[in-house]
Length: 197
Ligand code: GDP
Image (tube, rainbow, N blue to C red):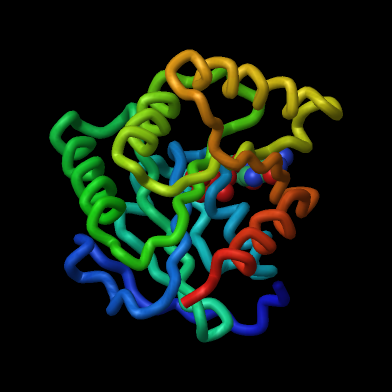
């Protein structure tokens, strides 16, 4: 897919405030600092579309972008901030889960995890919740350039082994580097292939 136009549409505090769901939608989520903004910007060939967040908790809103005047790219608030209060974290979780469960035009959720780390409890819990809730999702491993070749793949396999303890099937997996622009086309091809509305 060639990215011709990217347009910021709206920041919404709740799923009810999101733009009319009349276009296919693809959302991106992950822990703060996982590389979500960098990935979105690399995919869209834009330096500033998503705001890279050095401060945990900065992206607290559901941000909608209209791509090629045809589909929504949604930048979701990161989950699992260590440095915010429990009640703030609960509020985030509610915003996120309500959006995911109620947004009928959501085609796929891309769950980002850092390819350098062993499976993290919070990521596994979120992925389990997606599976149990019937959310269509894929796992995107980020920052693969920080590892030796094939190490990201090995780390992905460790994730898979963990998930296969409870599941028979694995979600689609992408190994990416925003820095080196690797894996971007695979994600965009998936979006092209499923963008049927
Ligand atoms: P966000 O909080 O998930 O939006 O994360 P950011 O996109 O702001 O990235 C967090 C940090 O990781 C920043 O310092 C980025 O420069 C760095 N980063 C993000 N993606 C990559 C990548 O693919 N490779 C490398 N080497 N660094 C990355």
